[in-house]
Image (cartoon, rainbow, N blue to C red; front, side, top):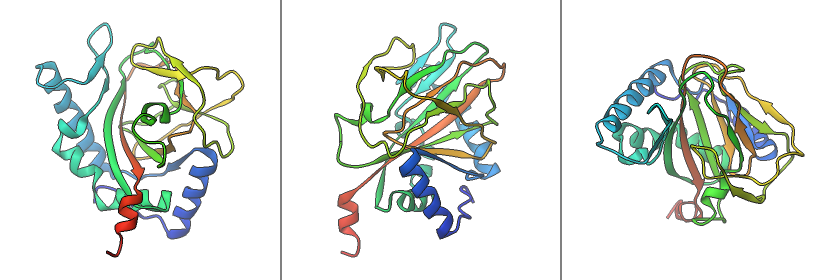
Length: 236
């Protein structure tokens, strides 16, 4: 088993309600230990190909350490198939109360002590030119325990935020856009154990902190959106 979908219907209803009201929710122990091991190995293989110049769509720091790798469905059959696994698809549909489709998969890394923080943003700023009539969610799946100092994800405390706020171009090395003004928000850091996932929706304001620890912080992100077309096709 890849995903530990042992959640009851009541669990998933609670997670869905929390996700839509707060913007994010933790799925505890969602990734099996075997899946985490496979993801760690897959990250090694993908980076090896990139170092050989086989693939593109990546950003590195000044020392050549990978910070972001995009378009992973075209780089990894394993990740392509994994994103369509029935368990994560079923959980996604329960969270959004609607049929879903996978959008894309990404790899994120803060490779060393002092790695830069990621600025506050909403994912919808990157989706807006493609769709604004469906809800997107991200499963952020770390490959290690994530503690304070590891570059944890931090979420703005909001209530039922479902609008895209003004963004500006970011000067961050591994980023494109950031929230124009985040000064009014208080951010909550989220500690995770290996195997846990954070799920957030596209309007959740989030950032990551500066890295003050030595080990690399690695994560895969699996992105989905609701699909009215697939919902309408049910039963046909």
